[in-house]
Amino acid sequence: MTDFEISILGGTGGPFENSTQCFIIRSTHNDESVRLICVDGGVGLGSIAAMLRLDPNKRIVESLYENEEEPVEKYVDSTVLSQTTRGFSLAVTRHLEGSIVQQTMKLYQNIGEYYITHPHMDHVAGMIMNSPAIYEPLVPSRKYIKGLPFTIGPLKDFIFNDIIWPQLSNKLLGRLDLVTLSSRESHNSLSIPEWNIIPFEVYHGSKVSDLSSQVSSSVYIITNTRTNNSIVVCGDLEKDHEDPNEPRLLCQLWSYLANNIPLKNLKAIVIECSNSLSIDERRLFGHLSSNKLLDELQTLRDKYGSSSGLRDLKIIVSHVKMTYSEKDPRLTILDELRTLAHEIPGLESLIFSIAVQGYTFTV
Ligand SMILES: [Zn+2]
Ligand SMILES: [Zn+2]
Image (tube, rainbow, N blue to C red; front, side, top):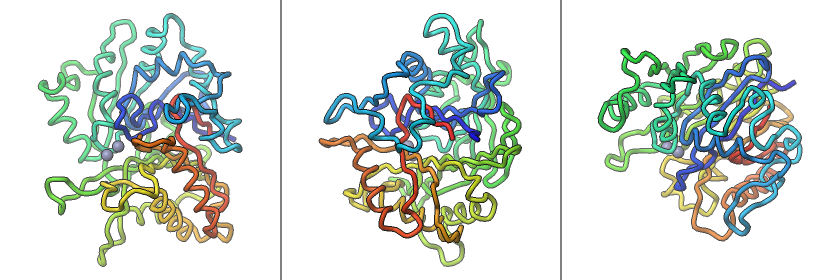
């Protein structure tokens, strides 16, 4: 049984601005009304419009490296392919009519909440620029932007401040609310009330101007309270430094998962792997590389302590940075992850795929 539909509006970490991180997530249990949430908002309306125009029968991915297009099989594990659609699912598109712009705005109307992992541009730019469409007279909507204090504070102070962008969150307008969440405190989604959502603060490197000052990001654990199935959707993150007095933040996240979510209910982890093995470790800048991601998955394996390891767990890799290289870095990273995991006990059967823009994964 499937629970979650994850549409990849944007699945890279830049620097190209048209594919930065944004996922639209829907419950597969409510086909009647289309209620959607977003995790991050790097891109938005432009990507929805592009996705609505895709031919679902053409199973290709825009690559722009060795070839302009590549077959999707190169990016998505063969066991996941049958549960993967190019474009949105029929459940989302069958309610839409009119021109592409009308369909796009209608779909946008159905997004009730944005769960933002951190306020970096590649995670919020689309959401900000799209926000005037909340007030579109024929398809108005009510939206909530949610996040931990280090996300919501800066969005209020530095973005929706009538200088960088109009203060569309002003109470007099009454259609956009910025909501501050607390780390590790669960709440139910307003759009999809059967979903319980827990934000977790994680480490995202240090400030350029002050190396002793931490940059934070978030991971969201989304659980369907009826089926108890969960997905984990991560923002940018890096392994934080060992502190003798307190387990590192990522370690606490893996412990939480192992203690609270049986492995059979963990349907997928969407996690960043910005860089390939070739990256100089001093240049990670708050991100993971293939070997660092596998280190974390080994910690998760240890926390679960299951004799069969992380058997058949789906890992959807996002936020790959588009680098100046011959080969598509997403393919390089996928290859590294699969090859290395094959040699690590308990990680051999992990199912790795890339969060390819324009595709919808059902898990
Ligand atoms: Zn990012
Ligand atoms: Zn970031």
